[in-house]
Length: 217
Image 1 (cartoon, helix red, strand yellow):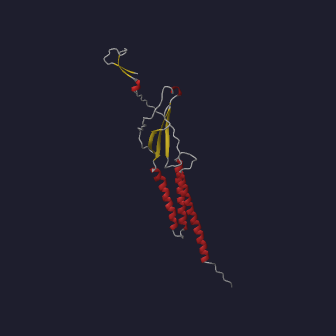
Image 2 (tube, one colour):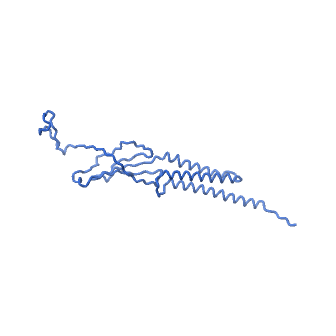
Image 3 (spheres, one colour):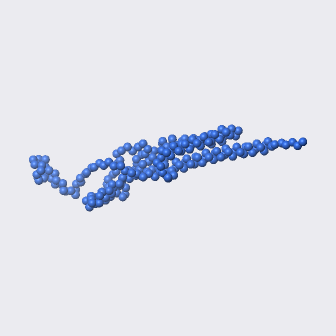
């Protein structure tokens, strides 16, 4: 029951009450702001195209279970911060289905921004792959140039892969970007082996074309 003291009353501490509102027909709002640090466990298998699902869980003490009930059926979760962060974009802010009673769970998604990763890793590695395969079109007489270019692209690619791995959290899980680099390294290695076998085959063909002539006297 909510009582409103009359403004015309001279004694504010008196029991003179003009209006009475039943509590069942009226609601009272209480707003409190909390600041806390939450932990979100990342699954980096899909890096850099991963989407992380995070949650903020609030639970009332057990002694308040008979007095307070948390209801989020008509509530709407609102995120008032910036949606575009330095590395992620915040999307899908909503209350989870497990909310209610003593527990309120707020879920949101972190979508990684792939622009910087594409331009700093995928694009350079693809260019190195093109340069390595371009050595197949150099004339066979310049075998030293072909091998040096193929080996150089492989070393540069491995350096790029090592620098990228150091910037990521240390984890034993294999990521999509690891599979991409392993594939590129395998292709460059195959290209080097092609140069080696082509050089060996060329030497054999030259020996058969120019056989040694022996004269008997």
